[in-house]
Length: 212
Image (cartoon, rainbow, N blue to C red; front, side, top):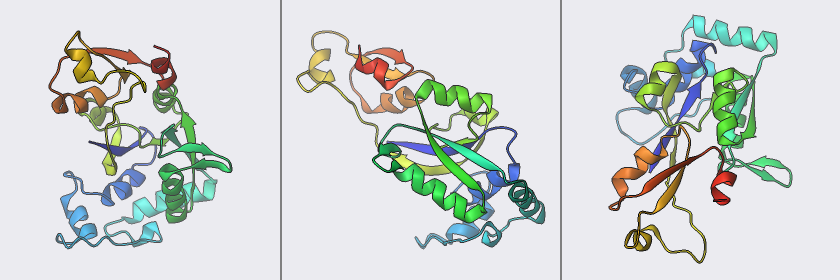
């Protein structure tokens, strides 16, 4: 199981990072997390405006209002999954609902856009994408990006062909070959849950893995 965090590209207003970090427990901001979550009572507050979030500063409010006055909008990069997918009426899934919530909360437009993994990473680093929830927090990423606490908990799944053997059966004959998205943290999250050795193959898209 893995946790995916909300990533903000360097250069986007730090005020947004502070606000988003307040909406999830973060070891770097325990006082604010305690304010938001209470003392372990399991009840989560519901906010209709960024002004209602405990601890928000006048400077942060001014920064957000400046974005609103400029008519700024933001791209939320998402991978094609059950969290974001093409539906008959457009995009559907959790990412769409999440962006709708952010839009209502801040009065700024957050638009979800589907990307293949390699394009998402390049777009995020290049500035085409403003935010993403596709990346798992690592020490290296924490040095380079503004990162909130987790916004989603995901099950790591192993996908194989219908008529193919599982990795344990393959491991009895040879090393299984498992594919991982290049530069993702999935392999490190996957390792503690397996008891067999395997070869790692790195791909840029899920389509590339399907063709192997």
